[in-house]
Each structure stands twice: as structure tokens, then as C-alpha cells.
Image (cartoon, rainbow, N blue to C red; front, side, top):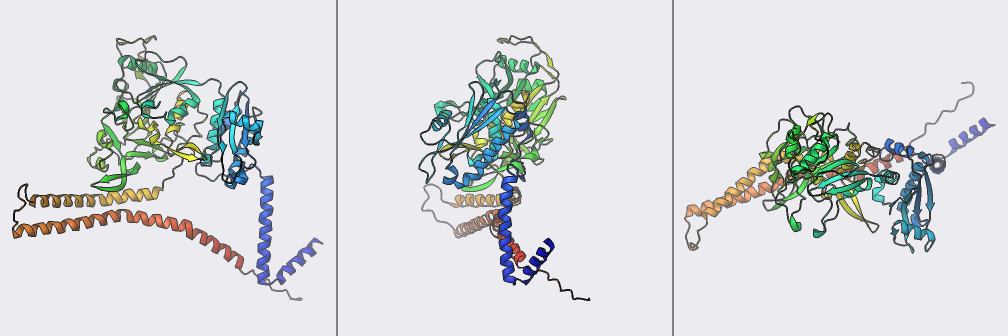
Length: 630
């Protein structure tokens, strides 16, 4: 019976005209499409394929480990207004993903996490509780009542943490934000970090400077205590000591740092040859912008010159500078963006990070057999230039490469110092020190992180703030803050979030276009400089021909007039050539950008449409009828 029906259907399709066959095929495809989607939504609920380069939609091993090891029961309340997706349909997929991810967290926690999804009706107790938890109201166009889309997490005592609003711009950071909340609320006691802050991470209310995001992030996971004055001891329970932009530290403080390291303590140092973000009194620019730990570095075999900064054309950021009276877009080799290719990917501190932005950074090298491991390395094209010149915001940054010195090896702005170290105070405790511990002369395995840029921790180097749904949301374009947290976490003895941070950042540069820009700059720079010199010489010669003060009525000889006209003609010609060179500098790059836009916007959709049309109009192969007796 089945074979007869199949034969009948085959004959019926064969008798259809070409137009009806196409219509039938389209209708059948539509039915199959709807059926497959209904089946997938029910049978494959919670399943997804992650094809992103950074695997941003796959739960990391760190998250699974953290959830599987929870010892504190947590209660999650997802406040999700029922009318949210109707008022803002673009949020429907994101809301479903948030809910599905939270359900996955609860499943992986083996009963240690309970999830409650709440639709807070207007003027209800649920709405009051949402506001009490700190969940933000969302006002949407076309909606008569405020909406809620946030999360509150509580533990079995009085601990609580919230995500006031799930911002669509932070969808790539969803797992990190959720895991951070779980780690924060599920960890009853925070480890202590002692901070010596010389650049202003804590902010300055006198000049309206807020606390920097890197320090705010650190406070979420650690009990951070900022130290000032002479340091003769570190707070009880300290796991990590961080020293940022140290200037003029007293001998007692240097001795305390030395003995902390000699005793096996973890130390993070952020020195800087030119701290561009440092402020002086009353918000004025600082007069002394360099920092160093020279007594300690020299004793520990670390070479660092606070008068030199790295200039690297391969990792240069593009900036706009006013050169010779004209605004020019060019690469600044002192402002560096280090991608994965410049990082040691085998260390958890950097393993999942995408980019670090350093400005006017210095370089480290090991001496006398010091166990110094590079974590970030500049390119072979890098130079060591004058730090003051590198920090000059008004000069031509290209001169850093022309006047910089070629180093013996690629400069290293970030490194780890380990192995055996000897004290910087062989004669013992210096005068004025109140260090209570016994003097230690050597450590067998040091734990020191070296970073030659303090500006990297300031918001300017990695954060921009956007207004999203009425809230000011910081957005990262580099992983500088993640780097600080990873380093503190690993040095304190744990790395649950290290493989989550930096999985996505809000900056994906067009590397081929950037490389073309650098190549064009290198090709035309010499020609441009020659033309600029020619213009300067012509202008100087014209000034020499001009009458001196008090000689306004002086007459010029015919030769002088002819020479002046020749100089003016040469000046105009040189300026025209300079404009052509500057145009050529950008023409190849702009042409590539145009092609990329054309391909994305026009060519690919057209090709897809043509392929679909060809598939629909292709002629089916008809089988010849088989004659009886053949």
C-alpha cells in the first residue's frame, strides 16, 4: 500500500507543470522550515553551537569548577517583566538566553543554586522587593509602566549582589558577569590586597576624579586596603601587595616590600617612565612623571631605565596629531595595543585576554642570571626612545622611531620575576624601620610581577562609558582590568575566573587595514619629510629676502624679485606635492575599506540571492519512460 501511494505521488509530481512544481517546492520548503524550527525549539532547547573565535557562548571550565564546588547555597531572583519583549522585541532573544544560562547554572550547581523568575507587576510587593534589591527600572517607548530586567542573588546569611539591568551591549560578558556574582556572594571571606597607590586609582574628589574601574573591579573580589605614608607592616591576612607608580618611597617602606618578597609574599609592581595620567596638586599636570624601585630592582637583577619608553610601529595605535599646522592621522608608536601574538598564552594571567593597551611604557631585562620571564613582548621593530618625548602630546610621534635606540633584544614591558633573590638590605633593617619580623636575607622562589606602565590601570587606557537604558555603563575596549584581576587571583592562589576574563572586548580592529596604514606611512614618510624640509627652506629664504624693520620703502633688484618669484613657485609646487603624498598615504586604505563595505553590503547578499534563484529554477532530470519489452 505504501509503495502504491509513493508511486502515485511520483506520477502526480511528474505531471505538474514547471510553474506549479516551483510553487509546490516553495510551499513544501516553507512547511519543512516551520516544522524543523518547532522541533528544534522543543527537542533542542538549551542546545547551541558556538562558532565564535573566542568561544564566548560556551561555559568555561572555570565556571563549571566554581559551580561544582559551591559550599554556600545561593538563591537567584531574575526580575523579568512579562511585557518587556513586547515593548522591545529586540530584547527577546537576549532575555531567553539570560534565563537559559541561569537555568544551566542552577543545573550545574547540584542543588546549591535555586532560580526564581519573577514578573514584578506594577505596585506589587514583587516590584517593591526588586527596587529594594537595587534593580533598575527601564523606561521604554510605548510602554505605560516601567519594566525590570535584572538579577538579585542572596546567600544563606546577609550577603547579596545584583546586576541592576542586563545590558544588551554586555551580552558577550554575560557568563563573566554571572560567574563574578556567584564567586562574590559564594565566597564568605575576601582575601586582602594591600595597595600603595601613587597614580590616583582611588580617585580625587578635589578635582572631580572618580575611583578607577580597575580598582573598583578589584574591590568586588578582594578586601583592598590602601596604604599611605611610611609602611612598616602589611595588614593581617594580606595575600598580595600591589605597588602602583612608586615615587620617593622611604627606606622603611622599601625595606617592608623587600622583606615581604623575601618571606615568599606576592608583589605586583607597576612602574612607569612617563605617567601621562598622573595629576599634580589641584589637578595640575605633574612635574615628575617617572617612577622606579631602583634599590630593589638593582638587588634583584632587574634592569629598568625610567628615562626610556618603548616605541613600536607594529603595535602602534592610530592617533590624530596636529603636525606642521595640519591635523594628521598617524600611528603613535608610544601608544601600544598588544594582541595575543605579543603575549605568553601559556600563563593563566594572559591566557584568555585579547588586548592590552599601554602608553609610554618602559622595558625590563634580567641581569646576573635573574629568572625573569617575559609575559608581553614588543616586536623586533621596536626602539627605546626618550620617555619625555614619548609622553609629549603635541609632538610628532614618528620621530620616536627615527631618534630611538635599537635594543639588544625585543623590549619586555610585562614580566614575571621568580627564582632565588637576595635582599636589597644586606646590612639588615635600615634606620627608622619598625618592621617587626626577623630579617630574611634570601628567598628561594620569588613571586613578583613587573609591569612598566602604571597608566594601563587608569580608565583612559581601556574604558569608555556609554549611556544604556538610562544607566552609565562602562565598556572595555581592552583587557587591562582583567589583567589586574587575573594577576591578583593567580598570585593569591586561585584562578577560577582567569579563563573567563577577556573572552570578548568591544574592539575588533581591522588588522589588515592597520598593517596597510603602517606600510603606507613607512613608504611615504621619507618623501613627506623631504617635502616639509623643502617648504621650510623656501619659507626661510623668502623671509631673508623681506626688508628689515624700518626699510619698508626699500627697493628690490630685478634679480631679487626673480629669486622671490622662483621661491614662491617652488613653495607652491612643494605644497602641492605634499598634498598628493598625503592623499596617496590614505588612498590604498580607503580603497580597501570601500571594497570591504561593498562586499559586505552588496556582493554577498546578491550572490546568496542568485544561488537561491538558480537552485529554484534548475531543471529536474526527467527519466525516460521504460517501454515494455525493452
